[in-house]
Figure 1 (cartoon, rainbow, N blue to C red):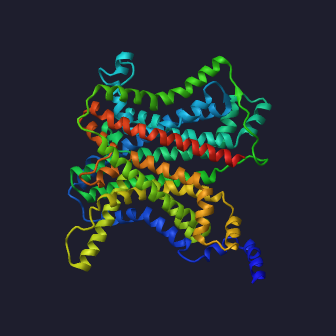
Figure 2: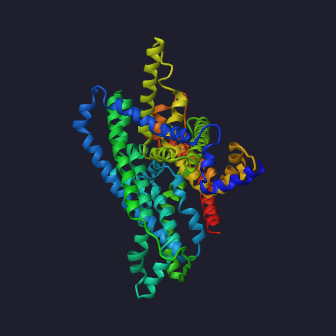
Length: 549
C-alpha cells in the first residue's frame, strides 16, 4: 500500500490532469456544458421566435426604419472607435513611457469613467450644453448641444475609452520597450519609434479594446434613445413595448446579434493572426522618461481631459441638480432593487465562472470547447438576452401546457428569476475570464500533492483553489456587479411591474424630460459604481504586481 502511495505522484507526473478527471462527483465536462447552455440557450431559443409567422409591423419596420437603424449604428461605431482611440491610446502611452507629477493619480483616475453609464453621461451633457445650461452659458454657444449621432458618439467616446486605455497600457507595459529603445539608438525620433514599433506591437490589445467599445455601442439603449439616434436596440424595444410585436423584436434582435458576433469573432481572428512578441524573453523593467515642467504640464492636461469629460463634469453637474431639486419620491426602493439584482447576479456569475474555469482547467477538449462557447455570451446585447429568455420561457411553458393540459402562465414572464437568468446569459462570461486566469496561476502539481495526501476534490477547491484565486474571483464578482448595476434594456423588458432599479428610474425621468429629477438616481448610480471600479483597479494592479514578482 505504501509503495502504491509513493508511486501515485510519479504516475501523475506523466498525466497531470488524469487524476483530477477521475475524482468522484460531477465531472468537468457537465460543468462546462452547463455554463455554455446558460450563455447560449436564450440565443438559441430566439431563432425560432424570429422565424415565426410574420408580425403585423415587421414589414413596416423593414420598409421605413431598418436602413436608419443600420446607418445610425454604423455611424456611431465609427465615431466611437475614433474617439476612444484618441482618448485611450495617447494617455496609455504617456502614463507608460513618461514620468510627470500626478502620473500615479491619473493611473487611478483614467479608468474610472467606466463607472459612469453612458446614458447618465448623456443626461448630464445634454443638460449642460442645452440653452441655459452651464456649458452653453460659459462658452457662449461655442460648445454644441450634445444630441443626435454626433452627441451620442461623443458620449460613447468619453465613457468607453477606458477599455482601450487599459488594454493598450497593459500592452505597452508588457512589450515594446526593448524594441522602442533599439529604434531610438538607431536614430529614430520618439514619434517615429512609437508609430513604427510600439504601436504595431500593441495593436492586438488595442483591437480587443475596440471590439469591446463596438459591442457596448451596439448594445446601448438609454443613450441613443434619449439623444434621438435610433439604433437596433431602440427598434427592438419599440417593436416589443410600443407595437406589441415579439416577432419583429426577435428579428431585429437576431440582426443585432449577428452584427455583434461578427465583431466578436472578427476581433478574435484578427488578433490571433497578429500576435506579436519580443525576442529575448521577458522584457526589462520600464524606464520612464522624466519630462520637463512644460511638457509635464501638457501631459497632465492630456490625461486630465478624458477624466474631466467622462466623469468630473457630469458628476459635478448632477450634484448641482440634486442639491437644487426636491425629489418627487425616495430613490431608496430603486437603490435596494439595484443592490439586490447586482449582488445576486455577481454571486451566481462567480459560481458559474469558477465552475467553468475549473472545467477548462481539468477537463478534456469537449469541456474546454464548451467554456469557449460560454465566452461568446458577453457579445449578446442585453435586449437580445432578454428576448431570448422570454422565448425560452415561452417554449418551456408550451411544453408544460402540452403535458399538463393547463393553460395558466406559470412560467412565462418569470419575474425576477427570468431577469437574473438574462443577466447570467449576458455577463457570466465576464466572470469566467478572471476566474480562469486566476486558476491558471495555480500549478496542477499542487492539486496532485493535495490528492496524494488524501484530500477530496472539494477540499482541494476550498483550501487551495479559492484562497489562491481569491483576487481573480473578487475581480469577477465586482465586474459583474457593476455591469448589472448599469444594465438598462434587459431590466426594462423583464423586470416585475413593482420592481425598480436606479437605471430604470433615471431613464423614466429622462424620457419624461424631467432632467432635474434624473439627477438623484443617476448620481447614486455613479457613486455606487465608483468605489467598485476603484477596488477592481486595485485588485488588477495587485495581481499584475504579484505576477511580475
